[in-house]
Length: 182
Image 1 (cartoon, rainbow, N blue to C red):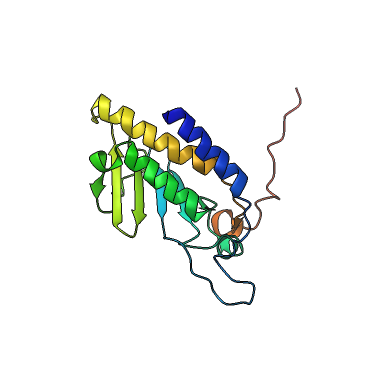
Image 2 (image 1 turned 120 degrees about the vertical axis):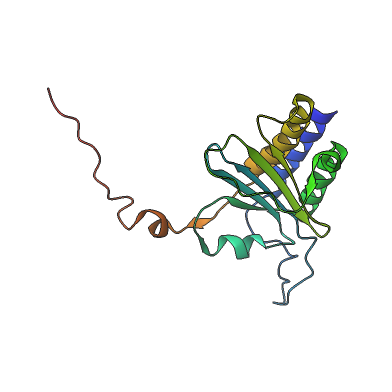
């Protein structure tokens, strides 16, 4: 049942995430229509310094997000309905039993740990996985993480990234190492 739900969730994400704006972010007459609930899911893997953020259009519209330069492309925007369904799925899989209230802690890069944080109208909750996490809890936390990452990976993102801010102007003009001829 779990695999079927995750498959359906991912299929829905692939079908509905066009990267464009929805009518809920701005109405045809130029007025702002009411948005859905603001939901943010953030995954941090401190071993590799990776960060993935999935947000509902109730938090930020796709057009609004993708039309400005960002320092990285870690944030993707997904339909309100899908984000609500994903949050409900996490709840059904034991999120409330495993999660702690509050923001996920900031750990030093290289630490053998990862976090999954969900923030919505009810506040923020997170799970923290470390080598000391009991095996049964780790398996359940991993299933939660897999559902969020599967949705993230199936969500299209069109973020314009400010390369100059991170690597300098010569990003594409860097000298490539030359191969020495014998």
